[in-house]
Amino acid sequence: MDSKPSKKNRLTLYIIVSMVLGIVTGYIIHRQASPSTIASFSTNIKLLTTIFLRLIQMIIAPLVFSTLVVGIAKLGDLKSVGRVGGKALFWFVSASLTSLLIGLVLVNFFKPGEGIDLSNADASAAADVMGKTKAFSIQNFIEHVFPRSIFEAMATNEILQIVIFSVFFGVATAALGDYGKIVVKGLEAVSHVILKMVNYVMAFAPLGVFGAIAAVIATKGLVVFSFYGYYLLYFLIGIMVLWAVLLMVGYLILRNRLAGLLKRIAQPLLIAFSTTSSEAVFPKLTEELERFGCKDKIVAFILPLGYSFNLDGSMMYMTFASIAIAQAYGIQLETGTQITMLLVLMLTSKGIAGVPRASLVVVAATCAMFDIPPEGIALILPIDHFCDMFRTATNVLGNALATSVVSKWENSLES
Image (cartoon, rainbow, N blue to C red; front, side, top):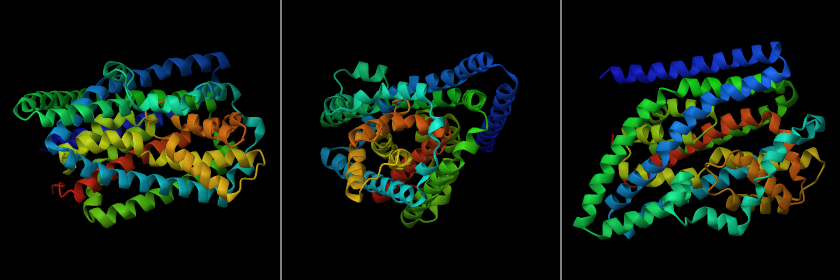
């Protein structure tokens, strides 16, 4: 019984060591190499991260489909699905509004945008992000949510589309009775096989972490912190406030089980933090939440929904960044306008999991809507990777809490 914890601890240690080595290696390259060598090094070393993320991505679609269908089929009927879904939606909306409000209040209090130097804008990267903003029209938003083909959705890892199909499939499977039980049994076996694959894939995590950290430090160097120190500091204060609120509510509901949950999700949090990818820990988080005591049917239902509707760290950052850009350009936004912006972000942020630099895409689109120069995202891009590390870890914490809390409300949290 002792081998698994020690194996888990070793992997965590390897990841931390990889982060340190990535910082050291990246800094040496940044200081010693020529610009062309730095560019080449960053491109090539990021291939390690690409390999790890692609290995994770290859198992997300079948895992979401198999576990969600099994979870819904085990819930039994539409009444149960509606009850659990309603509780999840209550948590998601409450957490999202809280996150957005925290970002709104703190950005107005600290005014980090006033300290941003307009000469540090990363214009080329901003152009790349702004090229994606067209995807957030109402028509394309609807197309992003509802699949025209489950195979297309799986091929592109559109989690929300897979969830929609899986809900229909799961409810139909439950309605078939004995015929449906055959399907459920087969998909349950598939989910166990995929979760076993997770253990193999996670062995590549340290390499992925090393590549991600080394690439960004080699390109930006440590000097980025001196330019954007206050911006990052104020954002981290916001993240700490958000964590405090989430953990306080989590403690009120889970009581002394909260410590056990945090211990379980420590490794997924670390991987999400170092790779800036929520997707990278989806399979591992599924496994750890089930070990914590959440029923598999609840995890299978809530967690995929959370990845589309419950991105707490990203939500906080969206209001924080949007108004910081306005401050940098000296644009005064009335309170009513800021509240409207908050409500717009509530809508446009849904279903963005899996979109590269999703938070920035939404920020750019929102800025354009409120007559704030959308190219202002270039001002925050130099520090965005480091902000992304913290908001991604916060997204993982929020979804772990949501799944555990709904399990508790359903009396499905085993000790």
